[in-house]
Structures are given as structure tokens and as C-alpha cells.
Length: 426
Image 1 (cartoon, rainbow, N blue to C red):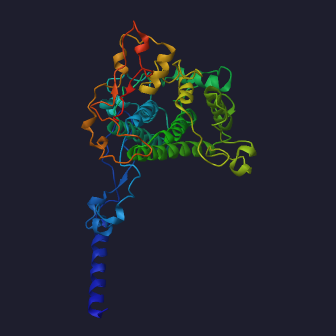
Image 2 (cartoon, rainbow, N blue to C red; image 1 turned 90 degrees about the vertical axis):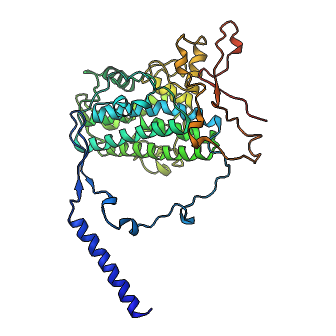
Image 3 (cartoon, rainbow, N blue to C red; image 1 turned 60 degrees about the vertical axis):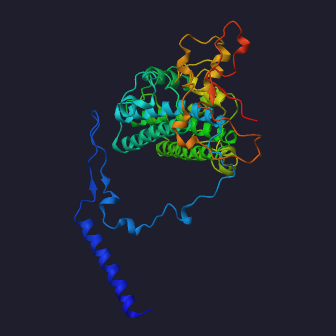
């Protein structure tokens, strides 16, 4: 290389670094412009925005159209099949529960204050309260809360909304749940809002159920956007569960006052309860397990719950409903969802239990006639392949039709209480 060109490039690089260094030095490394919400103190300070650093965009080259950033083409060019939507509508029930639980625990407010449009007229949760959390736990749960809001928004945008069901996150409900787990009545009743340890023990109940559900739904999805969505949602749910379990594992022998019961016992009893309610064997494990259930059957440490091959356990919608209803019966609501879940799958099981729909059942029909064309993500390109499908799915204004309300002829009713798939085009 010509020495003149070499030294010119070196000088330019030095000048660029000098400008960058002086710019950073002239600004505080952290800013705090987040608003104060309720009695919650201002959010943790954050690094300065990358956009405030001159020339930063040139230091991190990126081009949307570059072949370096283009994903591999999917095997199917249909983003979302109509039958992909019910599993995500079912998952929304769990996302709503987690969103309300974490929002109230961290901020003392719920979805109706943060993003009321996502509830679609659903009733507010029962007795959500702010927990007395230490600073680190507060930051963790605040992040979880906003992540769950993002999950609800994303699923509704891509797969269509359902109405938020009635959710019970009250002290009384948590006390009843912990009594079920321990096998006797705790005195005083378990209060998840009293401090960080109680809150995190209670939180142990939730993300793992969503993880199981997404893992179980994976084989039933075919659209490439559906699969990508599930992978992304599953990744975050798994991370939340791992963080909760790691937090609790550090405190394994801590006593949950005033019961003289360790964290290890509490988590083990909760996992056993979920297994009993689901009635499908061991698909849930506490933080300490017998060596034959540990990784490679060599250890008893169990920070991450997984099967003998260290693969995530999966659960069916029926199993999940038995757990979140806390009745051991997918047809009998209760627990976190006193009036049952919403969406095609959850309402189907309720209809099997009570075949006569209530007079106000329209609110559970997931917006029949909803114009899915508003969401460009759902408009597939032309479909030419035949395997594994025989034809192109129907893309009417709504991929679902209303169930029959002809009470004189119950045979006219579809199997799904909430909606039933429209026949595909030949």
C-alpha cells in the first residue's frame, strides 16, 4: 500500500476516535428521563442512546437488503395457516395472567393502565397489588412485566385478539394455591406481596406453564411466521423461568417466614402439585431432584427443569387448563381463571362440560367477522406446493365462523365453543 494512503487512513481513524471519545466524555454516561408511575421510584438509569453518539451508525454497518442479513427461505411460503391461530389464542390466556401478575407486582398497576387497548373489554383482574420488592428484584419483575405486554401485543397483531379473561391474582387465591401445594392450611395465609422471597416463590408457578405450552404447541404449527413467533416467545418464557429458578436456587435453604419451610421445599411442592393436577406423569421438577432425574442421571442440582435428555418438557392445552384452573379438570374453571379461559380451545372444553352457552356468550367468540386483512402479516403469497397440504387455506375476512346457536338442534353445534375453522378451498 502506498505509504501516503496508509498514513492518511490512520490519521482519519485517529480523528474519528478522538471525536467519538470527546463526545462521550461531554455527556453523562447515564440518563434518567423515565416517568414516575404511582409510588414506584424512577426507573433505573440507562445508557445514553446510540443515536446521540455521532457517527455511531457508521461503526456498526448494517444493511437490510444485504445478503449477509437475509434469512434462509422457509420450506412453506404461507406465513400463518388458519389452524395456527387457536394455539396462540390459547397462549394469550397465560400471557394475560403473567402480564397482570408482573405489572401489579412491580408497578402496582395493570394492563388497563399500561395498554388498555390490549384487553379488548375484558374484566380487570381480581385484587392485583404491588409487592414489596428489593431493588434488584424490582428491576427483574419490571422487565418481565413489559415483556409480557409485548407478547400480548405481538400475538394479537399477528394472530388476532381475544378478550382478556377474568384473572384472579388475589392474596386469597395465592393462599389457597399454596395450601394445595403444601397439603395443609398455612397459618397465617401465604401472602405473595409481603416481600421479594414470597413474591418470587409465587412467581415460580407461572412462566414454566407457558414454556410447557409453547413446547407442546410446536408440532401443530405449519406457517413459517407461526413457527418463528413460537420460537421467539418460547425463548423469552424459558429465560424468565430460568431467571426465576436461578434466583430461588441461590436461596435454596432460606426459610420462607413464618412457616419454617425452605425455598427448596416450596418449589418442590409446587412442581408436585402441577404434576398432580395435569395427571400426565412427571413433567415438572423442583430445584433439587433425585440423581436419576438430574442431567445425565449424575447430579441432583436442577436449576433448569428438563427430561432425561435435557429437553424441555411439553404439555397439551388440556394439561395446562387442569393446572391453571387448579381443578385437575379442563372442563371446570377456577384458580387463575375463575370463569375459564377464552379462545377456541379453552371454550371448547367448557362447552363439553356445559353444552348450553350462556346468553352473553358472544363476548367469547373472538371477534367473529374480524377483518384479519388489517394485518399485512397474515396475507400469504401464492401457495403452489402440495406437501403436506392438499390445498390453499381459505383466507376470508375471518378464518372462523360463529358456532350455531340453534338450541333446538344441538347437533348443529360445532365442536368448538369459540369458533370453528372455515373449510379450506379444494
